[in-house]
Amino acid sequence: LLRLQQQQQTLQAVLTQKQQLELELTEVEQALSELEKMTDDAIIYKSIGSLLVKSERPKVTSDLNERKDLLNMRINVLGKQEERLRSQIKDLQTKLQSDLRTLSPPS
Image (cartoon, rainbow, N blue to C red; front, side, top):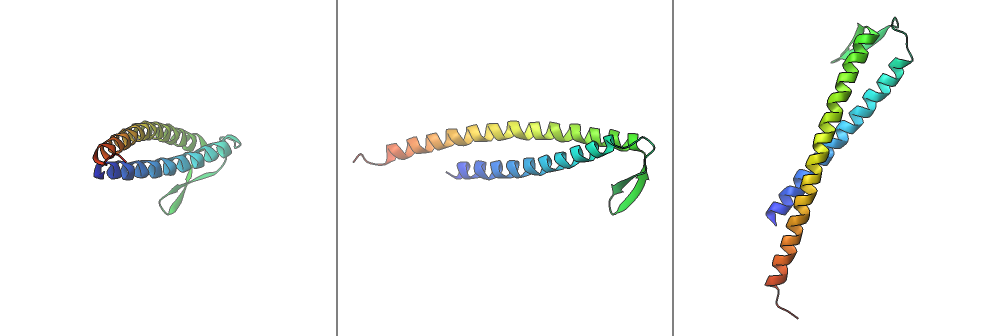
């Protein structure tokens, strides 16, 4: 039962992290979409900490595409981890139910 609870907590943490990464991915995709509408000589400011620094569109686009690739990769890894955890939780629940049936006297 303790192992089942730990797996459920781990699953919840994975789901929370995956959701945060998906939100960040959406923001990156929106930024890339806006950058596509601009010309290469457009004035762009990139956020670095609490500062806005002037940057070039191709450089910002390249950085965002790299970030997008990294986010997609991390989301895929978390998705696989989520599937494994769900399978393990299901197996533990089945085993726990089986063990409880053998402990309870027949009616």
